[in-house]
Length: 122
Image 1 (cartoon, rainbow, N blue to C red):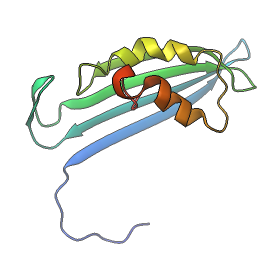
Image 2 (tube, rainbow, N blue to C red; image 1 turned 180 degrees about the horizontal axis):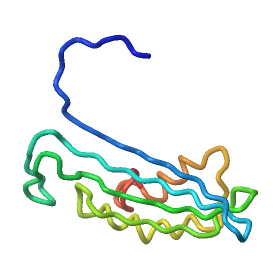
Image 3 (tube, rainbow, N blue to C red; image 1 turned 135 degrees about the vertical axis):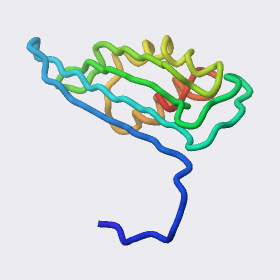
Image 4 (cartoon, helix red, strand yellow; image 1 turned 60 degrees about the vertical axis):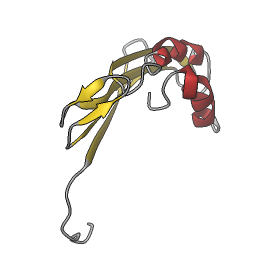
């Protein structure tokens, strides 16, 4: 357990939930949900005014994989994002089909989905 912190004010909240399901067809569904928000309102050059508590990111991904960790299917949804380019990651996720979740996978995902190709958060 963490020690008691000094007095502080919450500024940013991020929740990441992951769930794994064994499917009746022998495949696996891995679902991950990411939601984050600020405790204060602010201006965003792409979305305009974002109110305190309103999601900055609100994203979900479902990977369908086999026992070898090969990506059979992928579905992604971006409900909220801070930049106009972020939603491009949804279609670019399809490029991950057929890939294996092995060493170096995270680097490959960032290369495929990051920067001008969408959003590395997804």
